Amino acid sequence: TTDLEKSRSKHDQMKAATDRANEMLRKADEMMQTLNSLRQTFEEEKETMKLQFNQQKKQLERKYLSTVSALEAQMHQANQKATNEAAARARLEVRATRLEKALKGSGGGGLGGQD
Image (cartoon, rainbow, N blue to C red):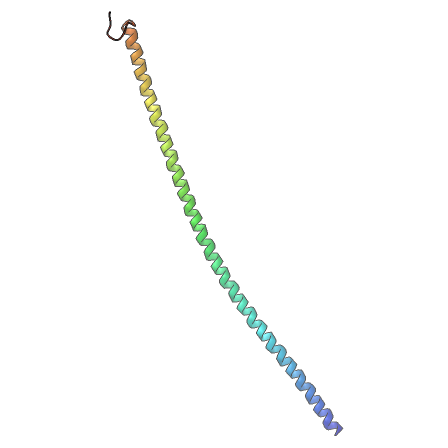
């Protein structure tokens, strides 16, 4: 009976070891599934963030170009205004010079000439 008991005990020990090994394998498999799920979630999030980043980048580029265009238009208007004012000032100076010459030419007594 001792040999049979030893054999049973050995069998029970081996079965317990096999059960523990199977449980460890099952847990390792669960961990691998969890890891793969996390990796997939990470990749999806990374793609989503990349898309959002690219969209925001495009929006900022459009806003920048729009701002630059608006500033260029304002600068053009300011240059045009300055050019127009300079031309008007030059015309006024020419008129003033003509008036001064006309006044001096008439003897300073007025535009009509003699009193």
